[in-house]
Image 1 (cartoon, one colour):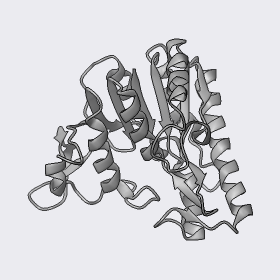
Image 2 (spheres, rainbow, N blue to C red; image 1 turned 60 degrees about the vertical axis):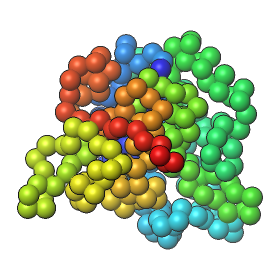
Image 3 (cartoon, one colour; image 1 turned 45 degrees about the horizontal axis):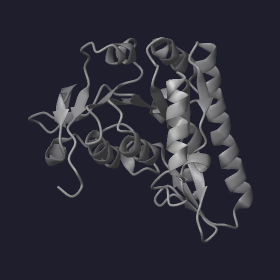
Length: 264
């Protein structure tokens, strides 16, 4: 099986009239169709989820107090609607996708599946060639607050528990960039990246500020995820043909992540 993340910057855009990027998602769905059997999809919330965090001040810690019930309901509704639109386009493109709510599958600590039998239910759906689609959400905590449950954390749980053969992170850049001799962004993405080379990463990566900790935090988590799979890459989700090439084993410009345990 494989695990694919559509980053928020891939399926949404900065647009005051329509932040959902249906055109790019439709293209991705067409590349996935016919090659996506045994796939679990996860998508970010991008320019639909991030504005709430900025406006209401939970960008740093991802926490919303229990008394903000109307805000919580509004955000959860917006995230469910985003996921529904993603699934709708996938199905219309021939991908047998279905919505997979994080609250139904994962525990309130956001560290594991609620029950082991849910893993079996998920793999049963994969054997039937269905494509579950998870998404970033808000999760209730024991003290009544709600915590942002990022798509990156969902990816980490799925990778650890399912041990996919391939993990693909699609973003709005073709990989992770290092620095040139002048300290500016290199012309091409790094071919490989380990935890020991993180200080070589150019600091101006896309999505530098978000509730999942920014690009540096995403890269660190992705390196940990790479220890649970044969292949883990960060690649462009806005360039035509990249996803299809990765799925069919063709060479493409991207950054391969070399996994290292947190305890190594």
